[in-house]
Amino acid sequence: MKRVLFVAMSVFLLAGCPSMLPQQPPVPVEPVTPTEPVEPPKPIEPPIEIVPTPPKITSINWNAAVTPLIREMAVTGDLEVGKLIVVDNVKNNSGGNIQAVNATNTIIESVNSISALQTVPYTQMMSARKALGLSGEDSLGLRSAAIGLARYLKADYILFSTVDGKKDNRVISMQLMSVSSGEILWNGRHKVE
Image 1 (cartoon, rainbow, N blue to C red):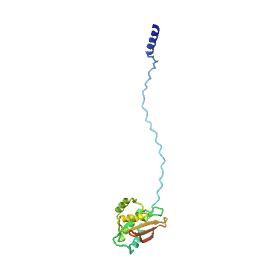
Image 2: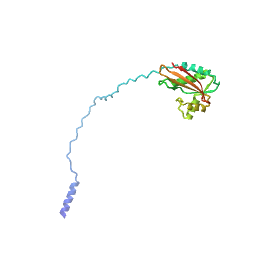
Image 3: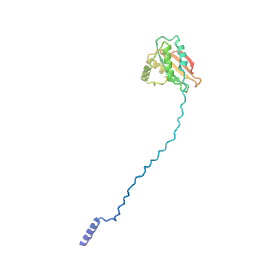
Image 4: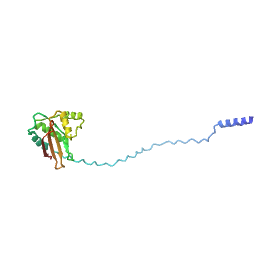
């Protein structure tokens, strides 16, 4: 039994001794000499794209198209002096860019300067459209929506304007309606140049 105990103790003793690995000689250190800095490669630039020129917007003389119509409307016998009129945004049925905002502004200016009617101020009109849930820039399309807006604003008349036709043959049509009766009091057409 002593012999087995002696062999076991020897095994434990030898197992606990670290084995020696062969030593490697240290790596010699070589001094580094500075070299010229190497430029990083330049990024590849994408080719320059040429932006196409936008289509030219032809200038439309809205005064020439609108003023004769407003003069004609102003002499309509059914209009009462000093009454309130709503000018609806010009509806574009021509398929091209006609600068409808400029057309609407020209109509408002012409009504204010030529006729005896008072236009609803723009800010009041936009507030009413917002209150009724209507978009500020859209034409009122449906006559019932337009008359509802005019009634909300306590206006007496409403003026609708539509531009129809193609580029060289556009025509502006206007229609004046009574808000209380829905009756068409006047309508007119004029070539847009």
